[in-house]
Amino acid sequence: MINLKLTYSVQPVITQLTQTKDILSDLTWLWEEVSHPWWLAQAEKNFATHGAHSGQDWSLAPKYRAFKASLRGVLIDPLRWAPGREQVYPSTTDASHPMHIWQATATGYIIGSTAPNLPHLQSGGIGPFNESYSPADPLHATQEQRDDLATLEHQRLLDRIRETGMEVS
Image 1 (cartoon, rainbow, N blue to C red):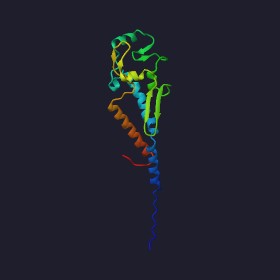
Image 2: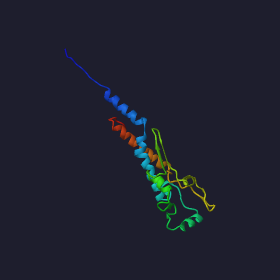
Image 3: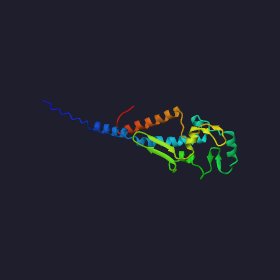
Image 4: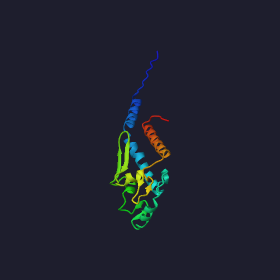
C-alpha cells in the first residue's frame, strides 16, 4: 500500500488577495505618486506654451496686453509676474507653495489654488479694459491628456498589484 499525503495551503492566495484589496481600498498612494506630479507638470507645460499645450489660447486682449507691456520689470511675460509678486503660477506648479491645494483621499483628489484671481482666469470674462478674454486655466487638460493620465494611473496600479505576486495583465 502506498501512503500519499498531499498538502496544499490557500494561505498565499489569501494573502495576495488581501494585499490587493488593501491596495484598491485606499488609492491615496496612487494619487500622490502619479496624479499630483502629473498635474503640476501639466500646469508648467500650460504656462510654458500660454495654454497651447492643452488647447487653450491665453492671448491677452489688446488694451490689457499694452498695459501689461508697460509694466517693465514686474513681469516675466504677459501671463507671469516677477518672483515675489506671482500667485497663480507658483501655486499651480509647486506643491510646497502656501496657496497650492492638494487633497488626496481613498477615492479621489482635489487639486487647485487659493490664488484670488485664478477663478476669473479659469472661466474667462471681461477684463479691466472692458475687453473679453478667453479662459486661461493652468490646470486644464484635454480629454486625450486626461486619458493619458488615466493610463499612467492604471499602469501604476497594475504594477503595485504585481508587487504582491499576483499575475495581472
